Length: 327
Image (cartoon, rainbow, N blue to C red; front, side, top):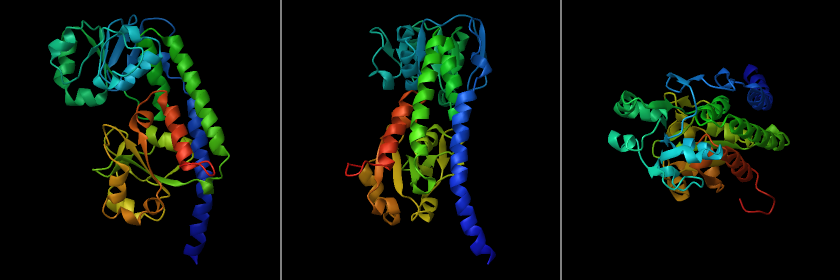
């Protein structure tokens, strides 16, 4: 008798809990004002994602960006002319100066030094995998700063820090304001959908390893803002990253609950829709049976740029296709 009573009680609490979580997330974005970016003039002291403290005495003028998201944000801030080197994944961006070189964290130190940078912006993955490169650059007096937000709450601080580094603090404030407005517009649409009508989604990060995204990551933030329910809310985060371990057994244990199977597609997850559908054992998953398997560009859900808004819009259209329209 006790079991029969508790089950519907928990189910009735779930929609209330989901609304509460989304509301808290929006409130967090409205009130968050990181101390690191309050200064209107230089010098400004910042702490990067590796825990290093750096005092910025003036904007940097010769910047190497070794992560496409950094490059895209710097261009969005109107500071593309300060770039002297970018990673290969950024070469398609508009606003890159003609003389800017394509470089990599795998290059010899001399190749980076030849560009005479005063700042090299990396992310924690690079500092972990190539510590000698970071040490070598610093030994030559070059400032190296590691940045990568791993949660929605760190986005604004990250953009403000980039504004400080390239002398575009006002532009960073405008960028944040525009993002906040776009986010509120998206969530306003989501609020119109009753929680019980929101599809449960498995969001794949890396197919060959059966990895999903960690609760609280940027990707799950996009999914929930777009009106989806993360079926893998119990996934365990891998180190301090957005990736979470899950495994085929756990996925299949929720086969009948997965309404939509969503996967990022890009360098990290070079998968096709057919590969997902044909994965041994996946045929029992409700989303596979219903043909609701979709790929989303990695750049729109996994990089901390303004494109996150577009990623939310795409996911929203996938989850709630127009009547009579194409899914």
